[in-house]
Length: 317
Image 1 (cartoon, rainbow, N blue to C red):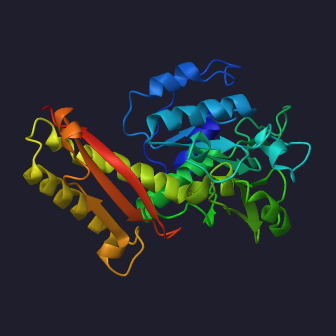
Image 2: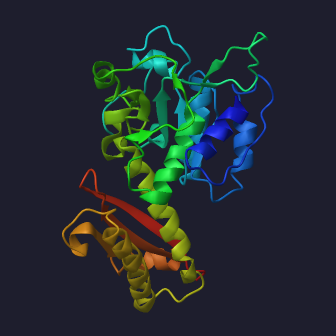
Image 3: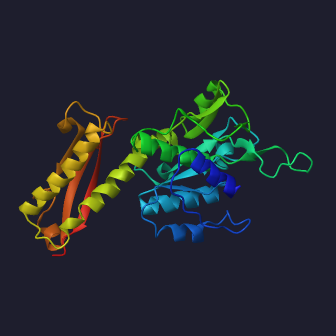
């Protein structure tokens, strides 16, 4: 299963892949392998192909929520009793409540159904079947990587063909997708015989507010990580208005390029983003603590609303 998932990742456009071995039957407890992945700062996608039940899925999302720079690709349950009930596909009660502060559930996206691939052990004379069911997370992770490389993280990784599969474990139509999409179940559907990923919601869907869209969640992760790394020059610099202006110029240049690439909404750069680093965000109490605070607002393409976050660096003062 793991080998086929890795093959699916590369077949769909993946480039770099870290593989952490898990003992047979060990997918129920992923704490140790996930701890290993914390050391790799360049990871943006995490998957545990075949992990079933809510416990494993929650562990993956907890890890991503803690790291704040990656999102988990989750597998729906294999051949659930009902393919119309989100809870059956998720493996337990779905995240509830109304839109609130984004939590760990916006750091995961679940895909259903499983896919069918050629069985490499099939000989025609032995007991092995020609086709076997395979969790979709490996193939989907490759699609994410492919879209990131060709269009950018801001593009939703949906309406994309799944390469290297023969069929789906079960067909999914428009009517069924209509009931599964709002709570955040991303369906793989056959279109003229060619299966395609036809959903880009985070787990929980509408309850996640503006983070119900997978591309918004991942793009915000990308922005925060990039800006944090790009403002490391402030460490040990004098915490003064001159430094604040340097930060504003640096962050604004980066966001301007994102706007030009179509990742931010607005007819002008002023409508697309703002960067605030001044006496109001850096009162005496923050300066005495050796911190410099920058407030950044961006209008992500969809939804076209400002998502505001704060970047804090230690000036070493």
